[in-house]
Image (cartoon, rainbow, N blue to C red; front, side):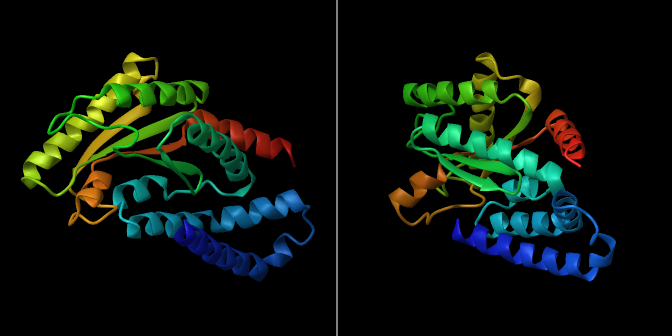
Amino acid sequence: MKKVTTFALAGTMLVSSLAFTSCDSIKNANNTQKGAAIGAAGGAIIGGVLGNNVGKGGNSALGAVLGGVIGGAAGGVIGNKMDKQAREIKETVPGAEVERVGEGIRLVLGENSVNFNLNQATLTDKAKQNLDKLVKVFKDNPDTYIDIFGYTDITGKEEYNLKLSRQRANTVKTYLSQNGVSPKRIKTEGMGIADPIASNDTEAGRAKNRRVEFAIRANEKMIDEAQTEAAAAY
């Protein structure tokens, strides 16, 4: 989390320097307009920094998904909605690791929250109970896309692990869909042994790497509504 804060601050400082170089064009604007102008100028920069940071943290695939930023006042509206949803997930799903990245949410469900039978893609009863709680949050916040990434530890052949991780991600998607989350919102990808978040040299580390991660991001409806709300504030 400290890394995200540091990189975001660096991006903000860079955006501010760009805004000051063109201050003549916005010096007569009100505070909301100034904020939107600065955000629009620097949204792409911050998005790239955040996406790169998540990638350095181990998850390049998820970083690429969450790296983009709308920016400006519309981005602020989306960010507020994502803040609320992140809090709901933290309060609802025990064992979940929740991190706000850009204008999206990174959600890690490890073996303490969503686990599988050994060498299988079958959800345990405990996993189903926690996914039931997550279903409620997703249904209460329908205007998002949900990207699911499956991972394994380094034990076994790489080809087998890739297939298993794909099956586990699809199992989670199927369970969410069967319980009322639109499958049109969900994409899955199996990552196998890629992007470990802990050392594979210990059992504790391997357990952490056997996980499912989510990238939760705004869909077109949320973006359109945020842009409309931002425009009305001018």
